[in-house]
Length: 362
Image (tube, rainbow, N blue to C red; front, side, top):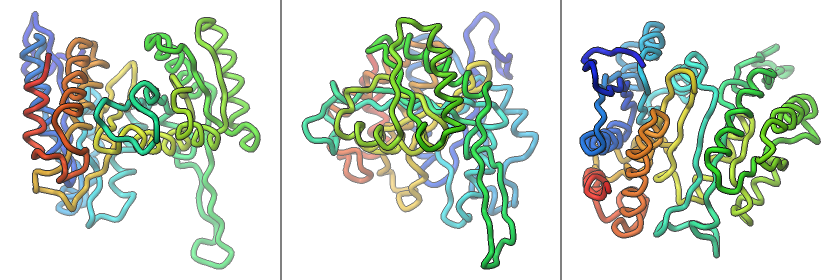
């Protein structure tokens, strides 16, 4: 742990970088920090926050996306808390690649962790499915695959144009992701089943590596059952039989796709949180939904995903009691208070939902 400015000797102090970002990001981050403050007082840990203004407004004002010095500075924090990235006046891809992907790659946040859990009282589009059936976790490799940026153009802008995008999969990258997934499945101790999501019948090079490593690493975990499914079958079964899954591990692009499907079956983007994890370094936590610029400043956006991201951050930092308490409070608010997860339809304002979570911390 870094001894940050304001560090108090003899006390547990976390140094947290906050990137509120664009659109409604600052509004949901405000509520997440409100819950963090209440949890710190209740459960006896201390923290500092340092705000960074990376996002669309800074880019439009200065032309700067993410200074080189910022990556090294962020590396010294215990965690990063992110609101949202995406601005209607900035061409898609500039901020996402320049901030999100760059931080994931340069901080080696090689795991994207996405719980898919339906809380009581939350509507799901799946008929006859409830919280008992929708409760699994996706472990997505986060720094390789198609997102590694390998490829290019030939004869761009002509009728003979060629565009190549290559999927990069290294034994080291694949194995460390798989090992994390096996360890997570073991710690979760629910069904003790790890499912590899791939496409071995078509992507015969990349997923030959994934499949071999899966079985070789899996031999070290005799108590974890190993399963495999093609990505298209995973999409079908997540809808038809989500109760089949415990932990799913997959590559970058397939993980990106199936986690959005997972968010929908757990009630929508308003409840889905995720972590970009470097188990040996600094991790970044965020709500899955975008910046929702049309709701900016109206105090109607749902902050529960951002609050849940704080809970994930606490779990990763070892504050399990605080993490469990935040989740319990979110569950109670979903079950007993808000009418809907949709912006403007909750029956409460953004800040009132944050207050409700604070009030229900056990």
